[in-house]
Image (cartoon, rainbow, N blue to C red; front, top):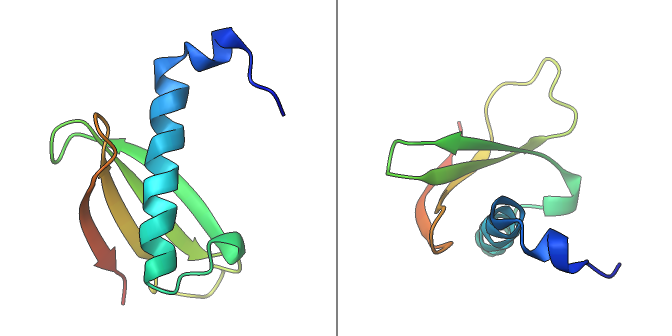
Length: 86
């Protein structure tokens, strides 16, 4: 897919692309199967402007915990914090 100039001008879209790439790299380092995860992204202000990327099981019904959570800085895409659910 070729992205048009107007898409590349969308700062939020480009920022989110960097955030998910950074979070995915950290998830893979921790042996999370990204393609088999239900991924949710939430904007947070806990650590300044950041995004919380949550990797959970696709089959989440009747299942508790076990999620992998990565907080990523919205400005430069560095990982702020990683948490493993229980």
